[in-house]
Length: 230
Ligand SMILES: Nc1ncnc2c1ncn2[C@@H]1O[C@H](COP(=O)(O)OP(=O)(O)OP(=O)(O)O)[C@@H](O)[C@H]1O
Image (cartoon, rainbow, N blue to C red; front, side, top):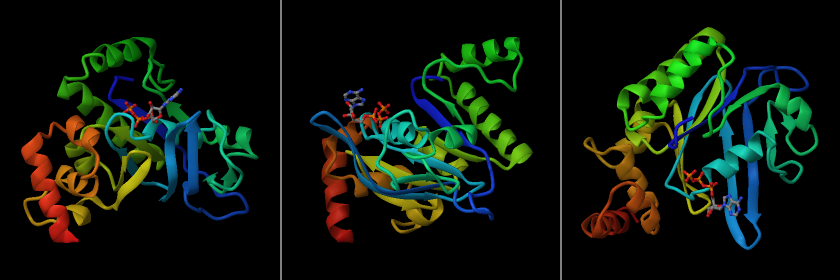
């Protein structure tokens, strides 16, 4: 999809052994490309049927996390489970339960060829808010029609705040905040946005502030707020 988008969609399947467990369970997950740590020990649980947003600046580790979940990168046994299946030991079974839409162009099998072309023509002008609205509409429709779990990454925090049941902020390979958007913002006051929450939680990450459009004044303000919150 467009440069700012990446989705992993996880269909709602019964967990191995019966019942409906969490769609995704991650425990102590780490991944490094040589000397560069991309994912630095994260724990995450995505309940079945949720729209879950994995948010953060460039290089935060979002794509690497998604690739580990969808088995495109190898993970240690027991660190990633998809509907109860071990992503390390049961890769093919995991793959049968998920659909993955990477940042690069790929076709949506539920749409006609003409509709795919129209969708991606719009997505490639992804500064276009209308195109992003089309993506959220499609996610909403998929969820309504199938009840599937959707794990989505985006840089657009205001949209995640509006459309996601739960979100996780990643920065420098770690999860800095996790929860229901409204609950996360309520902790900072009635006017706070999800972006404010992330600025406070990732206040030590200049790359995040840059990606969010922050400047030196924002950084000083962030640090003051962070120290006030302890
Ligand atoms: N194939 C690779 N080889 C070496 N380093 C990599 C590779 N892929 C990612 N990295 C590094 O791992 C870290 C996390 O990258 P990742 O792509 O997971 O971040 P991201 O949050 O998805 O960023 P973006 O929003 O730009 O896609 C970055 O420091 C990145 O440079």
